Amino acid sequence: MEILVVGAGASGLMAAVAAARAGAKVTVLEKERTPGRKLCVTGNGKCNMTNSYMGLEMLKTHCPDYVRGVLEQFSQTDAIGFFSQLGIYTKNRDGWIYPNSGQASQVLAVLLAEASHCGVRLHCQTPVTHIWKEDGRFYAQTPGWAYAGDACVLACGSKAAPQTGADGSGYGLAQSLGHRILPVAPVLTGLHVREKGFRRLAGIRCDGRLSAWSDGEILASAQGELQFTSYGISGIPAFQVSHEAITAFQAEKEVLLSADLSPDYPQKALEPYLRSRIERCPYKRAEDFLAGLFHEKLCRELLLCAGIAGRTPVTDLSQEELGRLAGCIKGFSGHMCGFQDFGHAQACMGGVDLESLIPYTMESAVVPGLYFAGELTDVDGACGGYNLQWAWSSGYVAGTSAAGRSPDKGSAAYTGTKEAGAGAGEKGEEESHGHALSD
Image (cartoon, rainbow, N blue to C red; front, side, top):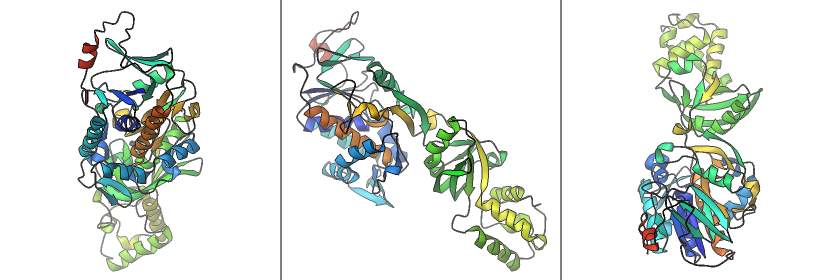
């Protein structure tokens, strides 16, 4: 059984290793000079490999049952065990799983070493421009050569983080093979806010809870370190609500982003606390009143939000004014007016529709022998290792499923089929094209 894997990212390498372990001959085609570039920068280079909690609400898709079926075949426990066998000792940070070394590059290194050990052939700087099926076999056209296999796994990634080589080319390959692509948009990215108050706070970080609202209903909410920026708001809470917020925004709904800057205090407790600060230091003015609670720029902005003049003596603040100030602290709000692009996003929503795949194998129901893995599919996870877990799970299932199917026809090695006009050479030329992990 010969399998072509297009893409040498996290899901592609996992698919290659899984297929090779199952006895298949595997060739991986990667358009970049080096494999796994995006994997190396995940988790700010520390590689948040997975998460101890794997609730389906953490993975966004139109087909949650499909995702469940794949995760059950290769869970987070399986992923931790897999990498442990390869030498990666993991540590748990409040459920977020990292390699103990804190180096994503080592996760890539053990994957490549295992692929080499299993006989996987890796060809870098080998972009695939066209894929077709003929007489039961798949052909992947690259500049000057067409690689052949009995099955093909598309693991080309999404459009997120183009600085790592991502370009969304896999969507076109999937479409050419008859698959529907659900609308693609960036997620796990910063959100633009119309109000100037957010932008005046650019550079400020503080703990808080960010909620996205539309039509009077909460869409999503997340707590952590908020980062105010020149365009609005970023940080993990913004990333965590981005899927729902961007979905609503693209549907032309009004989206309100509300930051609770004191999530541990309910508003009924916050107002008496503010009054107690006045009683302890009645000599202060309003501009000094919140010092020690928030950054000075944020203190000024909260007073502006509440309509309180900075030089007002705190003893002159009315209960109504304190109530407004507490309300601003609990709901510093602005209207979403856009979002950061693919270059600033960690993932994408949308992609290959899972409804067109056979449960729960990652195999196409349109083209037998064609499989999908990773970000190319309509699955995007929250921050916390969920996107990588989908890469591991979908890659493992795609690779093992592909290796377990019966070839439609033949099993000849690496056919040098030429596309009309292509200048492919002899087999020796094919073997020298790119970098081979193993002969």
